[in-house]
Length: 274
Length: 143
Length: 87
Image (cartoon, rainbow over all chains, first blue to last red; front, side, top):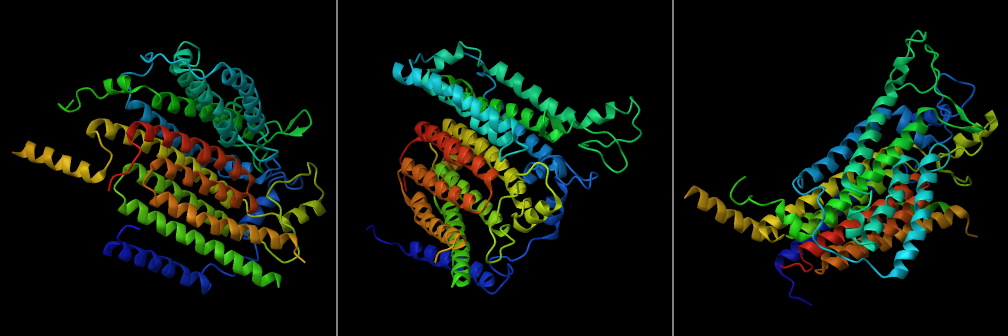
């Protein structure tokens, strides 16, 4: 064992002190009775209202409570979270603006042909599972972000298995992915404004972000797709958020995968000061 | 017998999360390598998210079976709705933790790209050496 | 006899206790690849805890993001930056 210095003992003592200071109020009852025995009233209100046909002024036509809270009852939070994710990806891309879109100088060959054929078959399966999770977000656990993260595995494996040289010459380029992402985000921003168009048709009063019929306004998105509850705006939000997330992950991976020769061109001149 | 076991296990989970959080804070403060700091930050964010869901695990009485907050019956009668209210777990912390995981991922991607940029500029990712290099640059500029 | 609730709580306790050595090893080890692997192991135990606490939406997001995507980005970073940590 390495010789233990004095500062290691001080660090261990400080960690134990921190844990004791946090644990003592918990044991004396600061979080309430453990494990908790009753549920908060706001949760009972949300669970009661989300698929209750007796109270159509508050219902969201989606039997899943978590998707209804994320996209309907607290939709503004999710809108700003999507904006934060967008800004982070743009900030990561801006650092490489000189070399983005150029072909790489390294000519790889990828992995062996057995791996390439097996990956080509399983990529179809991954995309189908991801699409099923996105489109059933209002009925089963899933939704836009979950399905998008599952479906984003496919472009990432494609860059590793088929080499980057092949991907550069295909249609999975930086410009197309950025276009898909911008269109998906513009649609997410426009769906809450659709009720305003119906003011021209003859409805008297509508709200922005409105999903179903409210007590003072009669406008509603469709409630049923063939025979399955649809959720109104929730289905459209899940679809566009899934597309946006797939293209975001692919863009982040494409930027980090550039070879070192190309990436050093992006920081040329920084030591002189421009 | 059952009730003491449940209370003991619940308190064990809470105290082990506290230990994880304290060790991660030690890791962020005292290790000089930037990649090690990033790993400690991701573990810290995940531990706090687990803590939030743990506090939302309410409505526990001995003898009932809980279910996640998803209604499985597409045209429920009011009896089925009452059963659902008695058994479902709190859905609100799950929605907030979903947002928190996405924002944490965005921050981590941006930090990884920044670490690459710092490496290409200074040729090292050790904070002690970067501090010494910057001291040399500042002394040269003000001389 | 062991009821279902007993089993759920015992599994919660065990996976929380086993995640402590994984975290400590992830922070102490000097080889950064080993630190990433221990961090992915600890994320697996946390995913099991999310499942037992009846949160299926979060299990899907967490496995895809923390075990898959973050480990890949960290391994790419380590390849470009350097594998061993100096004191």
